[in-house]
Each structure stands twice: as structure tokens, then as C-alpha cells.
Amino acid sequence: MTVSLRAFLDLLPYRLDQALLTASRRQARVARRRSRTASAPNMPAIPPRRLFVDVSVISRFDAGTGIQRVVRSLALELIAEARAQGWELQFVAATRRRAFHRIAWSKDDCLTQPDAVEGRSGDVFVGLDYALDAVRWHRGQLAALRRNGVKFWFLVHDLLPLERPDWFGANTIVRYKAWLEIIAGVGDGFLCNSGQTEAHLCEVLRRDYGLTGGYATKVLSMGYSIKQPDSPDAADTALHRSNLSAPYFLMVGTLEPRKGHADILSAFDRLWAEGLPDALVFVGRKGWQVDELSNFIKSHPLNGKKLFWFDDVSDRELAAIYAQSHGSIVASYAEGFGLPLIEALGYGTPVLARDLPVFRSHEENGVHYFPADADTATLSRAVKKWIERVHAADIEIIRPETSWSDSTRQLLEAIK
Image: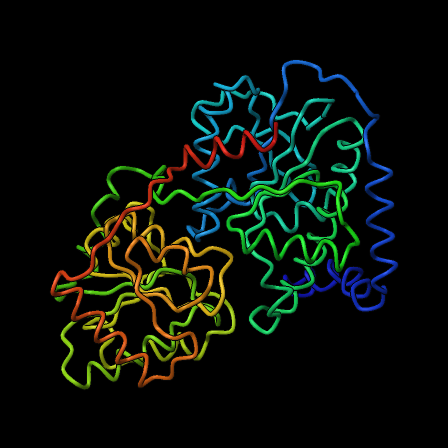
């Protein structure tokens, strides 16, 4: 059976459910699930309290995306922070055939028996990873854990598959909707990467699932440093292999429709025609619905000269690329947060961003903006003016203060 056919059959019940079920019946189903899985009131906690942290996706394959950098950074910080606060930390994962079970994810974990998760009152399950499929495959196990007294918190990055389905594949939308309904049915709390994401989530929970209370939310301040678990010998290979000689400006993020790569490339094409010597560097894996853009980059006459695309960059390489770039451009049409923006600021790198409300919160750090609806001519003028100011050292950058340790302490305070 091909992968595409397997995925189609796996998602078929959810596709039909989402197409046929009315909003009122969906809301009633979520309410019923929450009621049936509610633990007995005032059930005493049994020490020690265990913290189950889901790393189902990143433990199998770390693609180095922004979401995975967030998951990895928080998980690594939890190793020390959670234990210092009296939690028994257990990393867990699930596959299609195997329910959530303990795994030895960190080097400090001495786990010898990867037993299944069995919860009790006082335990907390943090859905840290973006595990759309694992949550769907094992929703019955999650419900059983909640009946046993386990509290559930999930990290939500954005609601974009609901807001702009045209930016995503059909399967991704079905998977996302199924995941969101399941966590609405068991979630005691939701961790969000920005106030915008928090507001959107609360609206969707009310509108689509009938939830007007019974859960908590917490906005985590995102850290900016890149946690680097990979080997030290990969440290400085990026600039060596890229053969960059001219100053370069950077875009970090998966190639996908909403990221705005095509807009920035069009602006640079115009500037290169006018004699701009600076290079443009894309860092990110190829995503979906970008075959035309991918082919255009590969066949571009300046590819490998003034235009570079690295789709397999390690964490250490990314840190080196940030540190030696002259500036970073964030051109997304929408974001829940926009991790590359704050990462660039953390390296003291000037940032030019599309003028979106979620990016305006960083204006005091020295971020410059171009109009959200800028055409190529307007955008190229904005880029040129910004580059001139960068080279003139006329932009003051104030680095972010929040660390991943701060983010992790916020997380632990929330789930208490």
C-alpha cells in the first residue's frame, strides 16, 4: 500500500466527520468527552508528581524547523528545571502501533525499561511536540489517563490551518482539525507562543467546540538562543561549504506559500539588476505547494553566486549563519509568533519584517518594517533603504532578554 493511500484511508473517517458533523453536535461531543474523562473532585495527589513530556516527533526525526527548535529548547531546559522543582520528569512518545510510553531521550536519562504511561492524580502530561498523529492514534489512552487524574497541557503554535487552509495540504488540514478537537476534549490548559495565538485559540475553542471555560491558558515568552545537541565537529561548516564572499542577507524558514520567499526574491532580482552586490541566503527545508518556486531558485542565473538555498542546515550551522549575516528578513504573511525574528535579534542582527501585528511587539528592539501589502517596487525600495542603513551601521539592536530557562519556568508555573 502506498504512503498516500495509507494516509487517505487513515484520515477518511475524520474527513467524513469534519464534512458532515454540524457545529452543535461537535460542541456536544467535546462537552461529553470532557465530562466523561473528568477525574473525581479533590482527588489527592500521589507523590512524587510525574511530568510526562511528549517528544513523539522530534525523538524520531528532528527536521530543525522553528517548531522543533522551540520543542527541543524547552525539553532540554526541562531536564534541570523540572527536577529542581520536585517533578519526576519522564519523556514519552507514541507511534502508530505503540501507545505513549517512556523513552530515553536525553543523555541524562537512565531508562532501561520503556514502560507504558500509567497516570495518577497529580501527574501532568505536557503535549510539547506537534504530534498531530500520535494524539489522534491514541486518544483513548489520553482519555483514560485523564480519568485517572492526569492533567493535560498542550503547546499551540498557531491556528493557521483553520484560518488559511489554502496555504496547507488537504491532509494537513484534516489532521490539524482532528488534533485540535481531541485536545479540546481533554485539555486542562494550553500553552501559547504569543498573545495573538492565545486570543485566536480561545475564540476557536468557544466558536467551534463550545468551550467558554474549564481550561487555562498561558503565554510563554520565547527564548532566542539555538540549543545545539548535535556534534561539535559540525560547528563551522556552513560558511565553508557555502563559499560566500559577499555580505549576505538571510531568510530562515521552511519554503511554504505563506513565508514570502518569492516576494523577497523578486525584490532582490530588481536590486541585483541595479547593481546590488549583496547576496540573499534562504535557510529551510522544502515544504509544500512550492515546486515552482523551488525550481525557479535552482535554475536562477545567480544561484550559487548571489543566491543560496541551504535545505539541510544543522543547529550549529544555523547559529553561524545568523552570526555572520548582515541582516535577516521575515516576510511571512502570517505567523503565530515568528521565531526567526527573535533568533536574529538574539545574534544582534538587524531585522526587516512584514508589518504584521504579531511582529510589532518587537519594534522597540530595532526591527524595521515594510508594508504588509507591498508590491515588488515598494518592497525593493524598502529593502534597499534598509540595506543602506545596515551598511551605514545606522540601526540600533536591543537584544531580547528572555532565555529558554525563563520560558521553562513560566511553563512549570502554569502547570502547577
